Image (cartoon, rainbow, N blue to C red; front, side, top):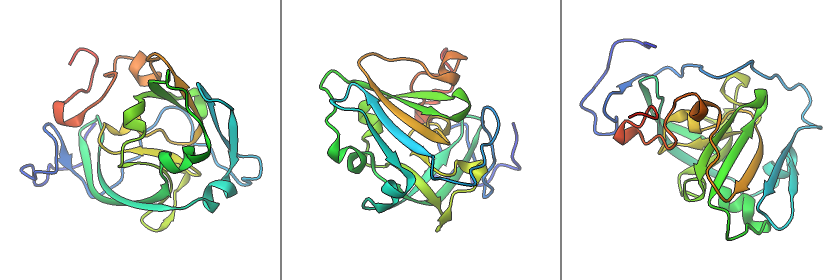
Length: 197
């Protein structure tokens, strides 16, 4: 997929094989969910935790909020620099949840039966965010409203949109794209695009 003429390909913030775009392309699996009423929307934390917990959207907004600026890199070849997100850090989200020591991976479950897998240390990375806002405004439906993950140090398919459930597991379980040939980890600086790369 092509999103315009490559720009500033020598920028040290752009991984190999990527080009910069100022647009924010929309790519995803399945249909875009449109929420007119968030009263019934919830985010569930379960798996290898002492107690399953479910948050409402308002409860997430009532938590301490964090703003993070980062660069994002799509596996299709575009990079968008200096993005400002606002949301909740995973560490803040888990401040009242006890995760079992046996949990080594996290599965992010989203709408349209989408999922993606992360090592637990990447979920808890200082630059990972559960974002509800982008550039000072609520996320648009196309970009993940009401809540998406932002895991900016990995290819952007790991940043699941329309997040609904966070599951802690002991062993790696492949997500949607990982089952379909994408790399299990997805480091853009190593060009880990596909499972054979």
